[in-house]
Image (cartoon, rainbow, N blue to C red; front, side):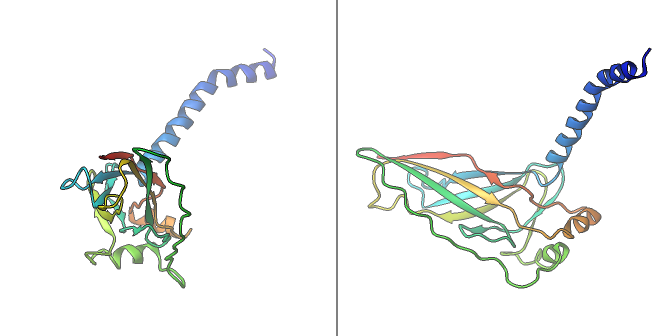
Length: 198
């Protein structure tokens, strides 16, 4: 058999296996590192007119994940942050014009400590330190909303949230791997909840 023809036949036979192996590896990496889910829930005490929303960062991995409490509606690369979005459809009349979003930035000034110092140095601080989430556990963050004040309009309110994880230095990747620590890595979008005000 001609060598070129033989090489083409061999590649044709092996190609499906190569593709399958590549896809399997990509899938494993994506699901084993920092896999969290973001859920939004209304205040169960006032489900029809909540004053607060609960954001749940749920550890969906099979191992522990360290995560710092994110900042509320203000960008923060050091600890991560979240933003709650709202859409309103009035019962009568036209929807209001969208308001321009204000900016907020709370990044830490100066050189950052290593990721190990950030985790271990704050994990014992109950309110603001990094939390250890075991598999299946969730970090719950409460945030205030003003949509259901007494003078708010009747109609349909929809809420959802976005989560941005903390930033890390390139050198932190090796530190995390050596200590077998896992942290949030990906931006998340939550479920949408809809509440109707009569």
